[in-house]
Length: 395
Ligand code: ADP
Ligand code: MG
Image (tube, rainbow, N blue to C red; front, side, top):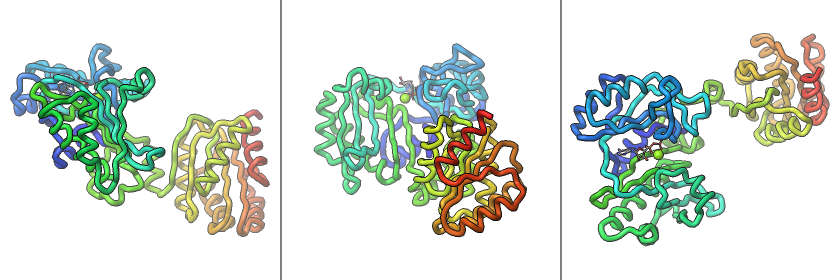
């Protein structure tokens, strides 16, 4: 789960990680009020969307308007806020369709002496979290990694202790810091590593992390992603969720306890078990088709879940055929067919449906299917199913 910059900065503040002062605004009037409340000569008006690259991004409705701008007066704040709110911001991370800006963050403008990059991620090779640092602040880390990998430092840290003092100082020296800045960095890096672990983050990125004219470190940007599988341990984060930023089909699937990922193809897939779902997608591709989604109804799906699953698949207008692939282990095949027939009645099918069943009670289930009178193509094994579903598209 991703959260907005202003939310991440609030969490940083609570964890003792230095951030600039800022106030959110949902209207131009609120933006001006925030400017007056901050009472600073310089503020930054920042679009809040779940994507980076806002500074270089532009609005569809206002091609000259950037997603992050500096402002020195109430008028400037108002003019920018009016153009930004309700408009669609396109950045390298949003894709062409862009994202609508509904909230602005009005923030104190900082005196920047130097911009750095700081990130924490889980690294498979290290088998745990690593802190990544670079002197190339403000640039995308992927670009730095490609063009000048020697400028990237990475340091694994323990989930029990967080980054240790000596590790933080080593990094600070490698970045060329001196005196008071080293102490500021040590505290900053260690606190951020604790933040990452304590909140079960899968990614925390501060780009840029700035050194101010006074030699202190401050998080100028903040991107935080929580590990969805650990969200149950952090109930308060529920409130940070912004559903307008998420794919509606994935939200509906999540609510129904289904695991769903939308893809670009035209063959909808309904499968029980993640491994089976992966191999089903592989076989569809192998036989020249393109899956429209990954959908795992889980081991113990009930009628309601299967119905919802069909509803989600069929709501995708790219879907031109559907493949159901069920292996009855704990789940009995006849239970699935009961659900499938009920879903068929409730949801209605306008595209070909291929069903492959195997496992417990498969004979009964196949009989139910053939006696249902529904226009369902049955398949005997996975290859047969993949071939049949691909064939429906060419016929
Ligand atoms: P994004 O990464 O989405 O482009 P950032 O928050 O990194 O957004 O902002 C883009 C740039 O705007 C930063 O690299 C920095 O130069 C400038 N900036 C952002 N916030 C401030 C601030 N509070 N004070 C001064 N400059 C800022
Ligand atoms: Mg940034």
